[in-house]
Image (cartoon, rainbow, N blue to C red):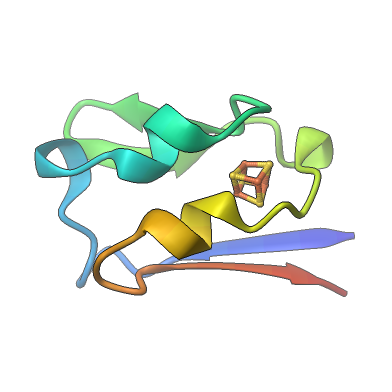
Length: 63
Ligand code: SF4
């Protein structure tokens, strides 16, 4: 099971959205100005979103 945690206190949302742009599986989407996880089961655990986030606001874990 993949666990994706977004720390919204540190996430810049629509002002950044780098993770939304890079996710190859379209797991992350912008809803208003907030990043949300839509189809977690499609996540390939590539961790690209974690790599591009300037605030370390997203965490992807395999549990
Ligand atoms: S780990 Fe990869 S597939 Fe999963 S949400 Fe992040 S960018 Fe998308």
